[in-house]
Image (cartoon, one colour):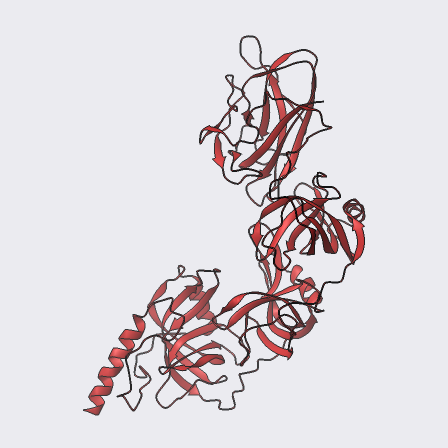
Length: 570
């Protein structure tokens, strides 16, 4: 009778475990086993699946769709490298790898304890059986290869727990780790294991599944130098703290996001606490050599292409344009020595200070870091910048919307150009005032919410093999010198080109010869001001033009965005 009851309890337990909710991060509500005093552990008699290693299990899991479970059952053999949390309802979570020091490779999530085993131990050789699952964290996209509620068989019981402390890698500083990582190909991972020692300078987000992300540097006020992405919390540590001295072990990874931003990191590293930190607020950053924006540009331009200054500098000025949204507590902006100074020096993915949710145009700031001469590989365009710099806000800005630009040498705004801000639309495919009666207009347009200012910008579809033109309605201008300007940006990480111009309209309403300025390189790191100067010797009826050029030896076809167009008479 007792044997029959145990078998029935086992069937109920296994069936219930595999039907549990996918995203429950705590022990499942398994049937009460208090009457099952012998505690079978939930399935030691289960048949085995296809035998694979931990590495093979990860590869197979990553090939699944997000959140999917394999149709086939597998048996994975390896060593427990880390036990996560306590036993709950005869289950416990652990990480395993093909070697004792292999770190976090595959997760047995709430695995069933075999009969007679009270807890899992690091260093134990096991085989686990069940279906593979590709778990994706809905909040951050973090992927974990795992098996839920696996049946576990103990192969070798290492009671010493020798797997608790993985072997260390090659010892490096944070700066050395960043340098080694940057030498990897985009998205690449080092073949060698490294141990990086330094101080936690910033903690990102909350603890999730016993992991937390932080930035570290070689000094307590060193800012964001190297990232420990979802690092494993050591036993007895509930969360990481700023100021803590740590050493992290794992393989270096060069992470590149969609905008091209590079983050040197170790993903899921093992962490050892060397000295406890002093709390949540790091000591104030030490300023570098004080310079103006103009001086910073001069110093940067003197560097070799792609070069970084040996010294740290503190650049003081005003934010003139904010580029993009906040990402991982960073945001890009341009600054100048005056509030209306335009794009002089770039703070590329600068660190937001504590209590600041976003940067704003008009803020007076000081930016600290090493100068970098960034050169676009395709266009050769040079950008003087500080990357991942620390920011101190000196004066709050007047808001997120800059004053309208005054393109060219200045002058009187010409009201004949209407709806230059693209806020008014006849339809989603036609901005008010930007449709010629002639053949000057030949581009496919659409309303975009990716605007420089206001709510809308105009997208010009990729032209392919023929130039496409965004043209104004026909306007008549008196004789004189004019500057037609607009802001443009590409819609992908690949840079492209645009240029401004105009076309005279003949008395019969047909177009005359098209006139254009030079090609201007644009990218999606921010909005680029494009200006075209022209002179009319007599009153002229014309259409102002924005060209999206075709594929050629000197231009690349893709969708572009246009906003904040102006026309001034000089």
